[in-house]
Amino acid sequence: GLAQLQTPVLVYSLIIGLMLTSALWSLIKPDQVWRPGPALLTSAGALLFFISDTLLAWNRFVAPVSGGRTLEHICYHLGQYALVGGVALNLLSMG
Image 1 (cartoon, rainbow, N blue to C red):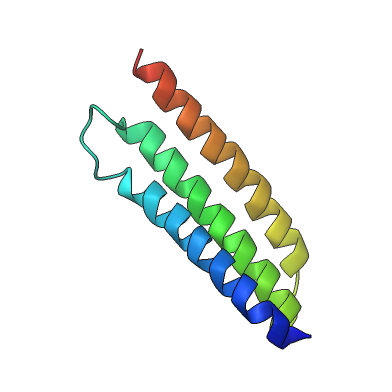
Image 2 (cartoon, rainbow, N blue to C red):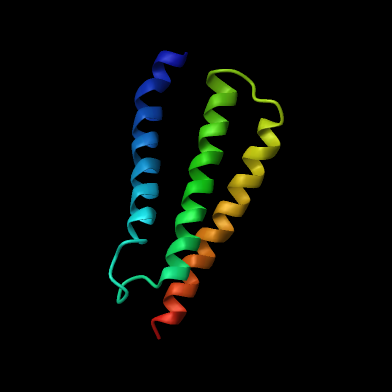
């Protein structure tokens, strides 16, 4: 069954990687696009989300991580809050 998941997991991994890259890119965009504070919060959220997905995949397909599910949920929820908060703050700061 794992062989059937290779292509979907690869595609999903590429998409999540692009999301992280896009968020990190906001740190170096000109000030008229992203303010530094919201860019940092958004990038931190994307990184936490990426970490949560990595933990999920590792726990499921490689080997269990001690406390992995708890850490996965903490990273996921903090990441989502940071992503939404960073985007909202950026939109509000742009007037």
